Length: 398
Image (cartoon, rainbow, N blue to C red; front, side, top):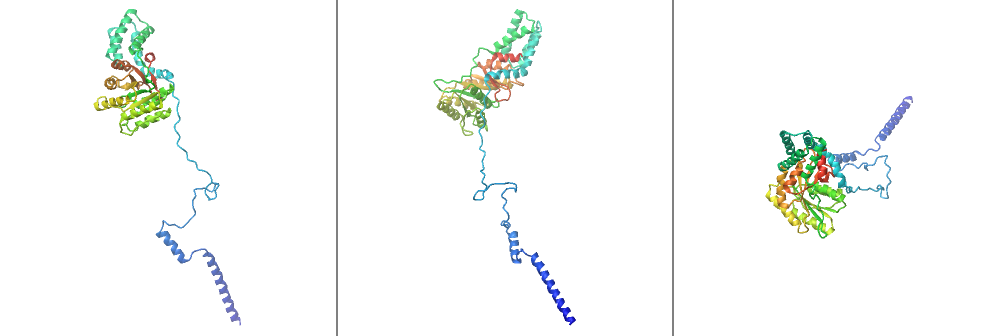
């Protein structure tokens, strides 16, 4: 009997232990897919990675982002797109205030000419060697042979008559003679008014690299400061981004630009610009032209064509030749050829600071018989000023 009870107890223990082990295994495997389903998932993941198992969707929001949702479940906040804004229209500096500021800059860069002359003239009686040194100083400043000879003769005559040995008196005499040489009586007005209600048409010409497009932009600022309406014609169709550059200058002061296709006919752009200026009642149309070497006959002929075509709409009231003052006497040859082709009426001298020689003003006026009307100093947007003979000489002698 005892043996039977032991056997029954052992069987009971085995049954209970087996049931416990079965319960643990069932809990451990709860939630796992069947072997067949597991094989299918593995096959899709390995053989078809472009179809991954669905997972949580990343909506780009962090847990700390609290976004109100609309009825469809999308964020209810409105999305705004920043529209590109037009550049702010600037108020150019009045021309009257520019020359005073530029005079100080010119005085710093050109003072060697004035100081050199005054040191010689105020030193008492001058020898032939002293006068020769004065001539060399003027020639080094690009005054030119003819004007230098004239100035020296006038100075010698006055100093001999008056017997000047005082520096202040010598400065007064030198100032008067230099002003006379520069030409205070020349008409330096920018002719920007047309006849019979037509706009003034200003054609800007010159060789490559003199700063024509920049000069046109700066000139537009001068005219806007004088409360005139202006239209720009981008007739430089060959230089990459020339029209874009001019258009940017115009946008800064609220001036529109007429442009054509790159590589197109520059004469047609000038024609269209003047035509639009007449239609809109614009005061002044500024036409920028492509830089061209004065030695290239074909390009010079094309420039003449631009002027002739433009004048089918309205007369050209001003032809401004832009000359880089740092080129010195080399600029005179350029000036001569341009004047023959398009009848230059005025000169703009750019880069007159730094290494430039102030005497080029006298030389170019004598060469062309036309006045310097504007000078450019520095790189600023308003560093273009109407030329004034007395202000210029005072800057040289400062």
